[in-house]
Length: 299
Image: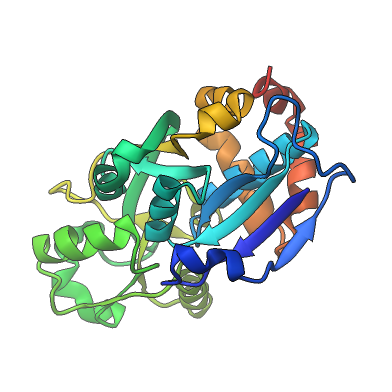
């Protein structure tokens, strides 16, 4: 059985159990946990708006359901996820960026977390503009801010990307006169789509890997000061009890690796080629198309 919940921004984890489930699906009628696992569902947290984590989470939801495990997906903002992992409300999140983006959370909660390692080591924070924009570097943006409406369209305010953009990039490149808009990833992508359709300039906070790079004519602004940081790894992070409760899954996730080309193809299938939110059939088809790779994740 698989369930999905959505936590609104700012909702305390203590009240999470009272939230109404927004969807429920089941691969079979067996509600029992797989042999060797705890007699309960695996609580898999998913960051709101982080598409690589959403894609990886739905992939593992399908894999684990096929192996007989119950999985419950809960969408939440970044800070409540780490508090929930440390407190035992969640078992696992697949989208921790290290050593930079989520370092503050790991420093705060690290003693109560289990880092299972990186499954992709090519992640990078970016500031992107339309491909035909008249600038190529962040050090040109301040002098050309008016060409972009004096705005940088951001994502969720609790994200590491927004923190680094506000605390490092904005003062480092003299962008204090620009309005850094705190929004959401879907809202940012909607603005990107609108600007693309209208042929207008736009600046957005973004990251690689992301399907937007194949869907929109955009380019990254160079970061000569290196304020956005070097390439990072996308880590799986678990509660300290996860290994004891689900030893088989702990081993699989610890060995999990997904190169960017495969991740891009899964994201593209889910978020670009498909216009909906019932990702189950999309992921199942992707698994069928990549069966050898998927089978290797649990062998």
